[in-house]
Length: 296
Image 1: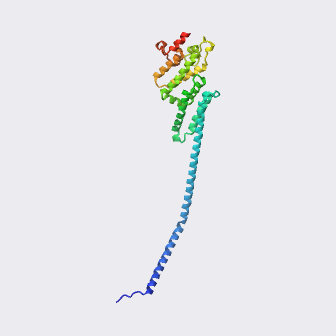
Image 2: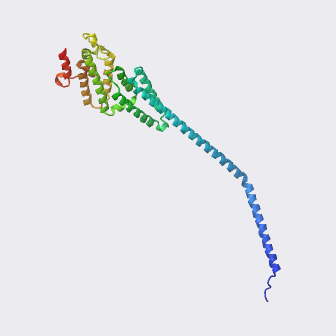
Image 3: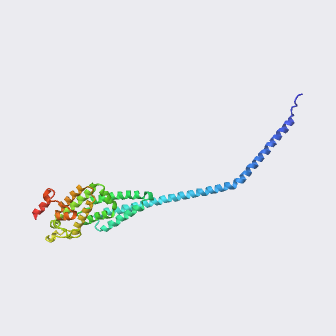
């Protein structure tokens, strides 16, 4: 028996039923998605709000960080300008008669304080301070060696003020004997020049006692031979203190000999350094002293 083929009308009816079924299913799925979105929409709104808030906070801190960096940069620029100005005033000291030695002490302390303020973060502070101090130490050392005229008392006092008020200066000089030698030569030359101007006084002056605090001034020298006593005293102090920065005893002994040869004063040398030299054993070194003695 042959299978009965569906008529065209039946096929159309079947197709319409399938289409209707699919539409009903699609509408149900759409309803489920809307329900799901409705349930999660409050959470999504909260997440968007929180995200916007966090982004605003991030932007705020970024701006604050940028402002802080700009402020620190401006502060460093101002500090460097102040340091350069202080150093410039010190370097002008030998040429400006109105500036007192106490001003150098103040400027050095101001520089040190400025360096510490501008050092930055705590973990970088020590290294930053040392680095900045050393940069200025080199300038101060070159100022003492190259610009200070030790034939002028105020320049000698300026050098002593740097030694007293800039701690890194002594460390820098002590690190290399050559640096101490350069300064000691300047002191010896100034003592030599002072002795040439006032031979009677410089060759005979001595300390009143072993303490070495007061001078026992010679009485038989003419008034014209009286040097500025404080100038001589400052030269001796500066020589002694820089001598203490030498690391080698042989250099120390040689410079004490130079001190005696510059002053032609064996007694003062022995009192000051607890040693002296017999001029007869070093005739070449003390040749100038012999010449002065012959003039007398």
